[in-house]
Length: 274
Image 1 (cartoon, rainbow, N blue to C red):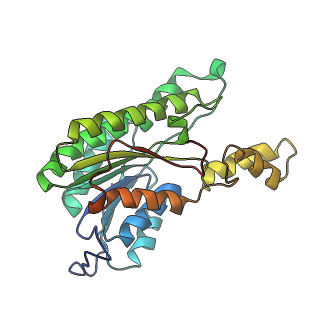
Image 2 (cartoon, rainbow, N blue to C red; image 1 turned 180 degrees about the vertical axis):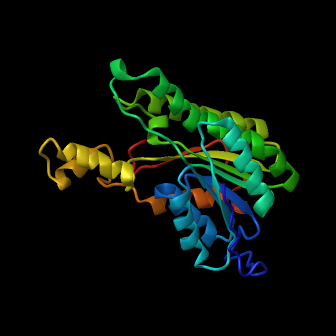
C-alpha cells in the first residue's frame, strides 16, 4: 500500500471551471483503460483522487501522469477486490491520506469467457466477488462519510451486459445485472439524502479487453477490420466506444448539478441498447 500527495496549489479553486474542487474521489481500476480516463476527467473537474488497483507499478505511472497538472492531489492504494480485508484497509488509508471520500467510482471488474459447461465455480465466485461484492463493500464503507459531508456520488461501471445478454459470458452477464440491481436498491434507500447512485453501461470500448477480443477473432483468419466489424456489429454506430466518452458520462453524474439523477443505468453504447 502506498500513498503519494502531489498537490501543488490547494487553494486554486474555481467553482465554475472546477466544480469538484476539494472533493475526494476513489476510483477502483483507475490505473488503466476506462478507469484511467475517468481519473483524468475527474481531475479536470478539480477532484482529488485515490486510484486503487492491485498493480502498484501501473498505479504509479498513472499517478505521475496526473500529477503533471500540478493542481490535484493524487493518492494510490493497492487493493485486492477479492479480499474484503484489503478493501477495508485501502479505503481507510485513502481517507486518512486525502480526507473523507465523497465520490466513489466502482470501475474495476473481470470478464471471464467460457461456455456454460466449462464455467468453473471458482471463476463464477471470483467474478461476483470483484464485480458485485466489492462494489457493495465500498459503498457500505463510504456512505456514512458521504452523509456527514452532505454530498455523495456513487457510480458503478456496469455494462450493456447488465441490460441485455451475451453468450459465453454467463458469470459476467449475471454479475453486471446484479450491479444494476444493487445500484437501483441503494439509490432508493439513499434518495432522501445527499447521495446519488447510478450505473454507467458501456458497450465494447477501445481498451485492452477489446483489443484482445479482436486478436482472438483474427486467429480465425479475419483481418483486423473484419474483426472490428464483428465486435461492433451490435452497435448501430458501427464503432468501438472511446474511454473518454464513458468518462465524460461518469464526470457528469458526479457534478453537484446532477443531484436529481439517481437510480439510472445509462448506456454509453452507440444505440446498442434502447
